Length: 382
Length: 129
Image 1: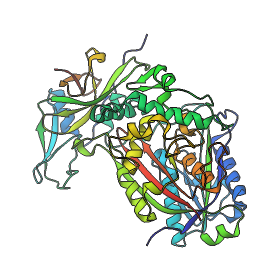
Image 2 (image 1 turned 90 degrees about the vertical axis):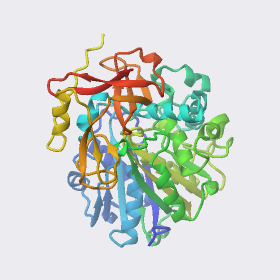
Image 3 (image 1 turned 180 degrees about the vertical axis):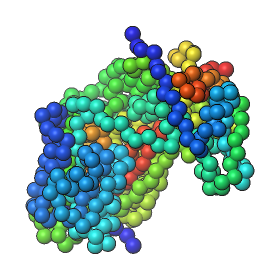
Image 4 (image 1 turned 45 degrees about the vertical axis):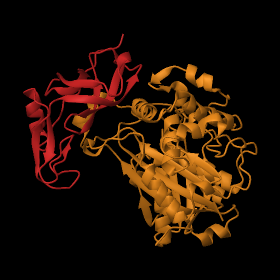
């Protein structure tokens, strides 16, 4: 049993807003849902499956009701920023099993307008809550150890931001459109050692949505055909403190599962959407997915190797979370959307990868240095 | 001026109560599985490695080395150093390195346990040895 080729992404929509104080969160979910349904050329009545995560106010009950959906399959798996990559895989499973035929996945929220509700506590709360783990320092701890073990440098990390900024200059909706240099990144204030402000992603209001459907229905619609051919998911945490190693992510498990199912290797990939909550996130995930050996990510990303038209592996051609958009502090949705744009040939002409027929969208969710999930999707132009 | 950090009071539960009772006596406990021999932290009743229920409390030396750290330069309560330290007994755990010159912290540096009071049981922190 495989999901290879069993599900197509027929509709995508990224909300153009980056700041939405005048809208409700549920409203943003509805707007992105409407956008994706219209992109696919469908109507709301066609939707028979719905997927949302922790950003959806109240979860499935209020959202299905608010949107006015009538669904026969639903899933509220929440693994932070990579939830939507996991939803895509789960939607493909549901479609392959005949549990639904047209699935809607939504993400939306407003962290730039106001603080996000706190996450529910886990079994570790008494043993960790006092120490002030935040996104910044949890990723900072990974970067610190990666530098210690492999000699990775701040200059190498900076190249990731530089590449993202080269792409963002062509995205009219990007929050940060200015092209920056390695020196700019190194001269930006230190936030949590060794991560500078420009090693960090933006905080934006907004959202995105996907329509996932059967091969037959996708072929009856007007959009270029993009299908999921491999999916993997995994989780990693300190696990009782045994053999702690913060230099790799759960991508070391989700990646190989996805590539094996797809029957392709990292060498075959023409475009990569890699979750860029921080520069170190990208570097570790490229290693974990097998684009280079563990420890060689610094060399791999340097000298513009991630810039479309310049380097070997064009990444995050929308400007990514580092420059364009990071709705609800959850980057997985926009990773899928830009990968689909590339495979459709709908990316900005300045960053469109020629003959882009195979892409990966990959992300992590949670705190990389504490507990996180990872999910990998291999997408193909059909 | 940053406000002094108010530490959260450990809530405890039936599974972890012995840890917090020992903490009040200044003893830092980890768990060890007598089936597979592996120590772990934070404490569970069932071993996270072999899933045996034969886990026992064991007092840790409180001696550790810094596995990694990051200095949060700004926060409402001022700068702080978050870290993972690896205990002499094996398990690594999340903590803060306190009462030190944070700019001199290094991976591999030896640290030792120090308790910080809360309105309930104290919490374990580490400081350079």
